[in-house]
Length: 100
Image 1: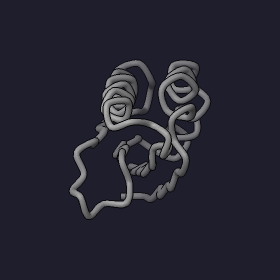
Image 2: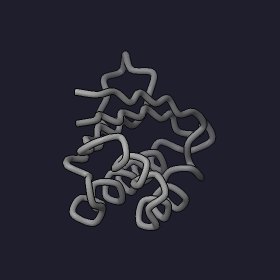
Image 3: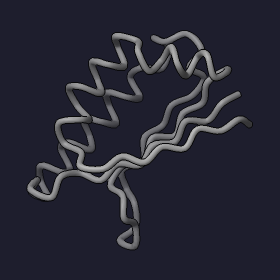
Image 4: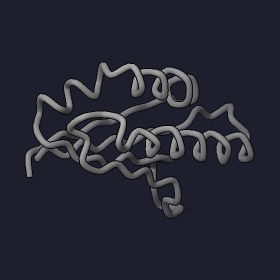
């Protein structure tokens, strides 16, 4: 199994209301991929970090293997969510992939 963890910071120019809307869209879009992409075992998005956090959104996903993670990265359903709901609104992205 492979874990794929992403942390994003949203763009500073977004208002608090816009950030809440963007977070909800990211969560709905990414969690909606479950069952659509072969090899994707689990996917969860956390948008409720504590005030001490320096990230706004966390993706915690699990894949059967590294090949499945690579296939997910280019899968049209994932690309549509990334291009439509994530990338336009984020300023930073940190990623950690590891085997479990």
